[in-house]
Image (cartoon, rainbow, N blue to C red; front, side):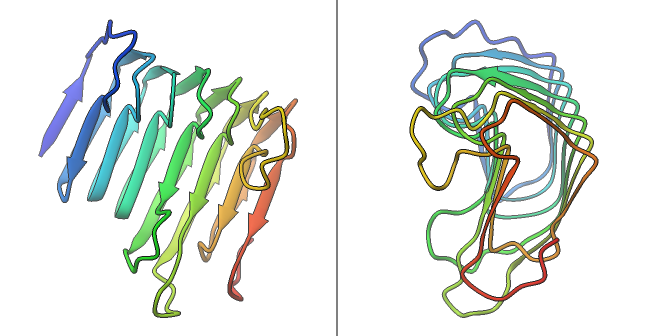
Length: 193
């Protein structure tokens, strides 16, 4: 079990992740103020039971919270995320072709403000044509001026970008001055709503 609370980062030009965790469980990253890290603030790879909450984040590159290489039973809530990042505020999934399992993830009560990339970016790929990414619930978030790349990238000009996650529920969110509210991409037939 790992608990990080009340951590203030005065790092302005770091090239590193704030916290990178691999194959762990019961991670709590709460009540932190983080400014301009060089990569992801929390980068959780292959973890379960992650809570990312009550943080104020100013991103420089990449995301405030990134769940990658499989993640289950996790929540991201009550954060304020802003910055000059070209990446998304919250990133769930993997860019590589893998069979990692993502399941039971909830994202709620976050305010994502003024990001060049998507507010939330969720992607998966399947080598074996078996669905490994499912059951993400996104609700009661506020997206203001996100997805603001100066050109249409085709993948990150939206409040939420979603690809290949089954049974994803997106409801009761507010989209204000976003390029597009939601962009759905899928390489297989799946029930996404």
